[in-house]
Image 1: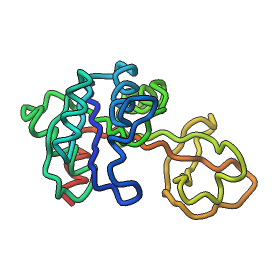
Image 2: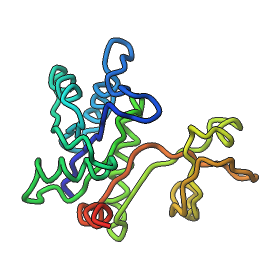
Image 3: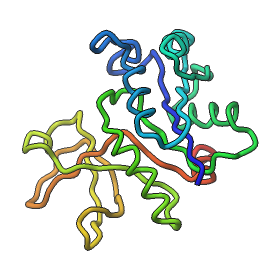
Image 4: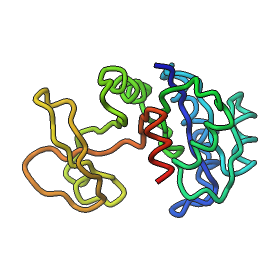
Length: 193
């Protein structure tokens, strides 16, 4: 397995325009995400940027970025465009898509996402979820939730669907991290649809 970690980012975010460059402790958010991704040690890390000012901020911090078409419809399309520029030969068979607005993601979560694909060769896509932090998470529309069929180990499962709706019940509510691992062929099929 030869993974590459790509971080899609654009200035025209609907909920918080300009958020990739929003400062957190003196660094742009996108640079904080980049640092967490680098700390994971999964593979090369590149920002797939929809805007030149994001590329400039990343490069000024010593990172690597690729400018993509700002009109691409999704982060997945942005990472495929960057991947075709960075690796047209297809050396990287796994792509980790880390959202550009999670500056405090633990490097362990990134490693876990990649590790799932290494451990489960029949899986085409992986992601990471964590148990709710408290009851307020169940009704918070800003917290994407995962409904999953859990494996007997209680630590992994198959995602059935994702929702921002309120979830009820006795069991834990699983909160989705903004990270996906794809086998390259699965990502290309997904974005071609």
